[in-house]
Image (cartoon, rainbow, N blue to C red):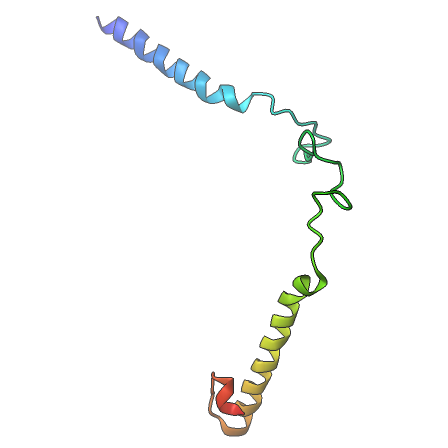
Amino acid sequence: MKSKTTILGASFITLAGLLTVGPAMAYDGTNCEAPGQCWEPKPGFPEKVEGTKYDPKHKESELNKQQESIQAMEKRNAMRVEHFKETGNWVYDVEKLK
């Protein structure tokens, strides 16, 4: 009885191991130039997106939003630092400095 339980347990462990290894070894349909460099377009999509119907065509103003917000933040911080150097009092709300 004990040997049947051991064999059954070993069979279960072997089966579980095969089930977890199987998907990892499956072919994923990519053609890799080198390990980790496996990008390729999905079937039906162009090799390059620019100039196709899939091109998002971002507006220049949309692309510059982050840079504009960073510049505004730097300007506010400069105002805070200038006020702090003059008075020794840190004021977070820039509206109070005007």
